[in-house]
Length: 339
Ligand code: KG4
View 1 (cartoon, rainbow, N blue to C red):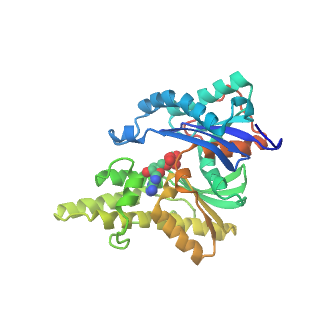
View 2: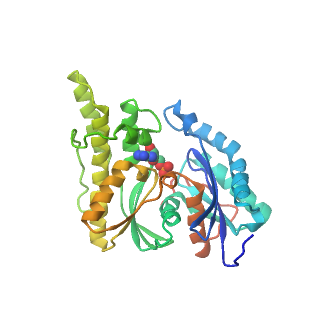
View 3: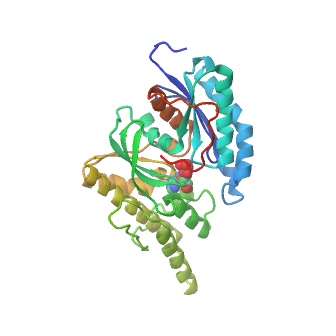
């Protein structure tokens, strides 16, 4: 299949939460196939991901996804150089399904196994969208479970400069979305609800973490709850459009403030966004504006690559593979894996 001997094809498998995904990526940058089976519609009835049900659905979906991604790429396992798989962080049962499938493929084919940190994958989604993008850069990783400012010194040399001390930004959005009746998945629903709303109508508290680049979102979440309850007690309605616009703009501003400070402190003016919340239009708007003001080069993945997918895992797997990373078939899932 490979017409050029130097081309490296990685099969990437992702199953850390509620998406079963598999992809073939060439040389870490070019998506050949990208299959995603999302369970979001199923979990909606429960108001969130039910871990045990997620694991069972991954079992049903994982082999069809792998087969589809190879078929779509016009390849077989023989054409693949290595199998990359998310081994953490995530839900343990869900992770084990993708990991077991990857190990099975490697055991049967003799191909190398490369375990990938899911957060490294999110960062690598940017390489898939911007062929010219190279480290060093700063990356704000914002997802349902994590909020971190990472300095990417090299493709596999990552260091956390700041992180949330409590809730992730995605969690702060999802929980408030549920309280105001938007349901699950809260992030995209709140994004839609706030379109055209007044970002200055409602205000929320901010927590400053001293001299650090760390974040705290639980106080912001509480101030949103207090605001909703206070209005209710006065018999007033929350204006959903203005409330969600103000809330998302506030969270985006908090995220931008520390990221810009990190840029000033490190002297790195290239900034990437990554993770599910990087799909948020308020976040993108704040970063677009701030990056112009501070003369920063800003990158964010196209929408479909912000949330969980196999292509980002294959991309991270490529960089790990050429860096010499190989895992044994005894690799285990690590639900709280750190970068
Ligand atoms: O990265 P991701 O798909 O999974 C994790 O690794 O956590 O992120 C999921 C998070 C959820 O909190 C979801 O509500 C949020 O990303 N999200 C959004 C948007 N799309 C997804 N949050 C705000 N606005 C969006 N458009």
